[in-house]
Length: 424
Ligand code: PA5
Image 1: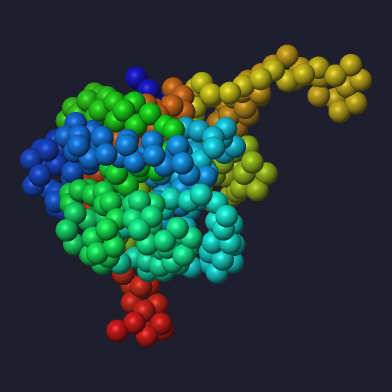
Image 2: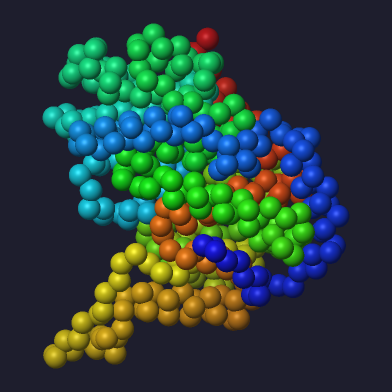
């Protein structure tokens, strides 16, 4: 078991009140009759993923990590966040690795784009452009500039080896462009939407190129799928989390604050916010998913959490065994007065901050707390956690009676932007 759920400080939950509804939705998900069920492919993906493509991903990843200084991951939303979440969670923020991952195609910010393109000059680069639709503007703009850079640097023939496109198997501008240019293409399955796609080639190629064991990641996802396969809420931790969110919402909580205490989980929180926010924020329903990285943000947001408006509950994503730790040293002079911590490990201090804050928020401010404990930050645990959240998100959003797999609201800003830009 790589992940455990503890609801003892979140309230009391009467599962039987929700069991009938959950059983009905569970059957509709399994039988693929639920609304949006064309996009339930993630639920069986850990078992039935394309093994030939998986092997190709490993070969490409080995080539990239052997040759490149930089892999540019060009994508946005679900075509980017999962990769970055996994790579940072598993290998840390200052990894000891030759290959640097650089993210583009995720913004219109001119200084970021120009600075990043400039920084690529003189580096040995490969590009993985990722877009399911193949038409996303941020990604397409950045990719045109990257393509020109790669072709100018290495020539058109060599560019075919250095650019890999991950997209729909048959449709879209990127697929047409990639086929015409002769790039290797990897496929995003039709039945897996962007924010549920980290365990497809979308995430697997850059994650494997970063030296991460993707077999272990898939094994984690398989084990989570098995551990969260029961229709019985009492036996299914993902469904418990799904229902607990709805119960807390019914108690007038409108914000779910994902709390992490490891800096390398900050992008996991971004990925989680997209998963839940884009899946359930529809028809004027849904919890607002927010995140903080403590203790850093205790010095900014801690005040609001402790004494501000009582709109939120916390979901603490705790890492039981961090990958690295050390003993805090003693100092004979003790001028800084820190000798009271000498001999303790850094993680002991972090855990004291964690559980001290939890009691301050829960016992003194009355904030409900859902505790999710990850065994560690391994590839296996990432896969386990991702599948756990997919299952929980699907059920939690179905309980709201909305489709978890579309995002109609995202089109509204695009229309207004295209009008200004004169797109026909
Ligand atoms: O979850 C989603 O579907 C979205 O967030 C998409 O991943 C995001 O908009 C990027 O889309 P695309 O992969 O088509 O470029």
